[in-house]
Image 1 (cartoon, rainbow, N blue to C red):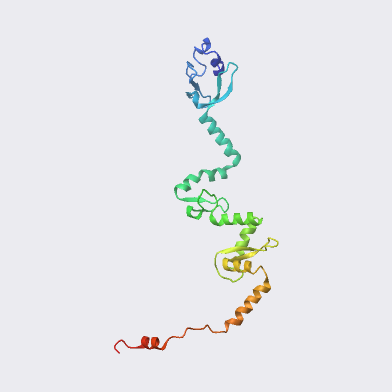
Image 2 (image 1 turned 90 degrees about the vertical axis):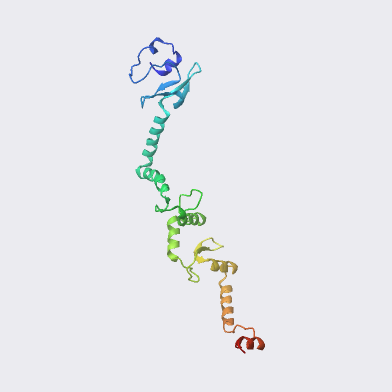
Length: 229
């Protein structure tokens, strides 16, 4: 007899006899129910509620929560694919070793190369992501921009941490420069004539020797005196 029909009339004669499935037990009370997938008799709390019957009593799903979660898990990852499921299942394994895989470059790195807060991208790829989002370029163009500079400032040629230099009028990216050069260009107002005038100013004053403070005669004599004199 079906469980919902028994739930309507638990005193039915059909419920007193042996069920068709010998694995199932007799339904003596509505607190237990057999799962049609794993064939285990469990409490009704282990089943999801299905709907309400006409007499106001509650019906339950034929599969228990564990079986439903297991089949839903398999269906979910069947749509995602094997590769994405393998990456998902390797997360706890890598975490136990203090490692993490970047979702952009796909390289397994130490957790110290990731920002705190549960970020899935490493620091270098996180910078590329912010760069592409800020200047509306693709990740491929952002990576090509960083690789073209070879880690050196395009203005002075010094190897340092680079900043993105862009045209303030159009917003287009001009290149990568170091922090001091980026500040210099910003204070000059992106005016080449002003920068050339500053360079000529430095050339004019480069030949002038740096003035030195004269030393007193008494101090110089005492400094060269012998300890025994």
